[in-house]
Image 1 (cartoon, one colour):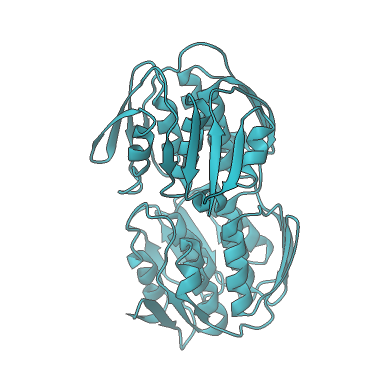
Image 2: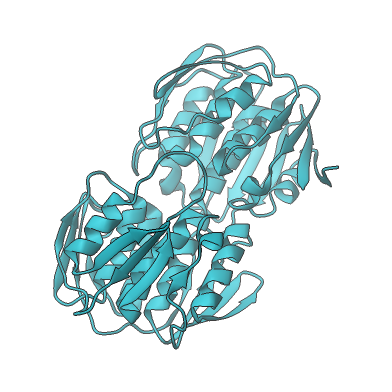
Length: 420
């Protein structure tokens, strides 16, 4: 199994082109199951999660051609309606295939989801959506077995909280349901909007994307299309935080700066200077201290939970005390014990982390616990004194394309080696 070795203490200077969004690519790939025609997705990142999903789609009946970052998917027939545990356990997003399978075939059997261990994330709301839309189901032997004998029926649904996954799921069910559907308390994340716009271009009738209420009038069928996957705001945010940690000057290209506006403001509060243009941002941190800054995660447009671990790593070297409150997932502080191995001073009080800045971090062997936690360890290691080894980096490969190449091109010293 591979591990990453980082020699810390080097400033970042250069330019990074941001890849396509993992969190947009996956639901857009799954939505290809809703049509018999070819769906062409451009700017899909080369990630292990994408590879896993391609395998699953092929099992279900998709023909896939993948050339660099261009993926063509055609699912003329659904040949299997079983999504097995061995694949679904690897990432939660694969559970969403349940929606297009029901819409196209009328029944499906999908394993309960897996992915990063960052919270319980129950499927209760998914089951509620199906029940409201005329789908009967049973949960047996670790699988959800669902049928819609008389077809999907539009319904009014209210989510208990703003769930990105449930909003994706609703969109893919409702577009082919009979009649009108509405979703109250829907997620507003850019990745939800990206999926909705894709479905609109395929012929779906959707209103309210990017708001807390989405209305859909079902159609009989959807067509194929060619569409660009948007850039990854979490990748962009991660590199921006890395610059704030190491110092230097970094330009990030191919991004929508408005999508990370709240992070930009937070980084400015820490002492980073920023200069934004239409699709890029230049960030610079000079030799001054990292100023302590409080954050609180929230649904979009609030501070992303997917950047919380990275920002906490930054605050370990701040000049004071910062408070980081996690409001989305109840178990997303597992990186704390690993950051402590660098010498970080962090106290936990339930969903609140109190970070007392230290003068320096000292390199140590550490282990990634989930995708975004792995990024926080990279950031800490870039600034730590000495050589850090990071194990279980398969988490990193789920969400960051060519991370070593991109950072090394800006002055970092990162090597991937085979663990003995």
